Image (spheres, rainbow, N blue to C red):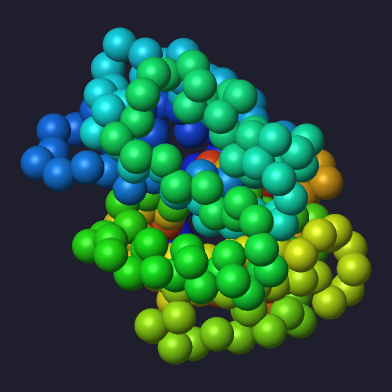
Length: 230
């Protein structure tokens, strides 16, 4: 396991504080922010929208996604829709907005996003969650996408070989995530406790393979259990 683990009272509040502070720092160029999905992300994004309203110049932010289900952008299970409803539509115009899936086959969509990301000089912040099975982004245990090692392959189509998580997906690869200056994991609730304990113990779960310049784990007490010393 790689990174700084912080056990916090509220994962959403801790995320909002950390990310708003990072986004508020002066910069010459835009800021590439990679967003996630899930209920924890939704709450974290609502808190971030509120906290950043007066401190962040969102017109300097380029929004990307770390993974996406191959569904229309207005679908109830779309990560794009979740991020817009809970954050992006609340904070005003961005510098740019890059949905990960619009149409076509998963392979075609992955190739298009690969082209978009190849033009980025850096990945500034990547937000990730952790599933009960230890997956992050759409890198599932046993999936072909998880085994990509070529640093030039940034985006691939993916599907859960265990059929636990539905839909065809598009996802960043581990080499792509490793380009990030900062990765922030948000892990909340007892449903994540077993997976987080395995990650801390060094088991080979997808989330445990993540590396970047800096990796921060924001974990609440329900998810941390006894796996992290207080």
